Length: 162
Image (cartoon, rainbow, N blue to C red; front, side, top):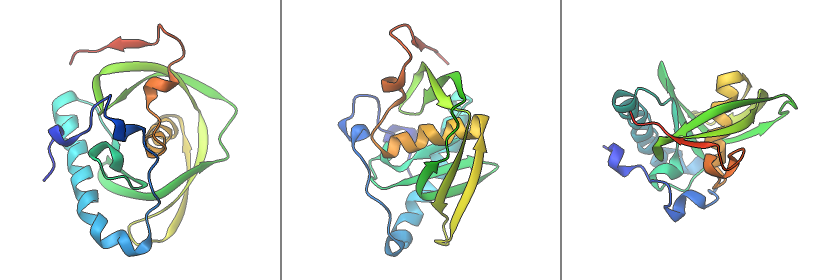
């Protein structure tokens, strides 16, 4: 079982890599990774009082996989955002790879997301507000983009000791 010590931290070069797509044939070998990621969300939440989702590259698995754990774990394979709104929202974003740093940035208020579920069925979700922001953050991880690179300006970083 993975622990919080297994989460890659800001500065690790793997966090800046673009992840490879998941194939249907890889599902069986990735299901333990899904379980690890779901458990890490709960561990992070227990320690920091925050955390809803994590991307596979945050533990060094360079695949297009995100696990959200809100109520129950849900795996998103090869998620893609589309139809993103022109309307933006500004927020302070946090990340499991830099747990004591907040980054002020902008995200699309609404978007749609296409992905494969754990049964390799395609789904489309309409996302708004906090879920839209959350999945934009996680899909950025799959593209090697950290919230720090989206900071609004040089005054948009702050420490939050928890």
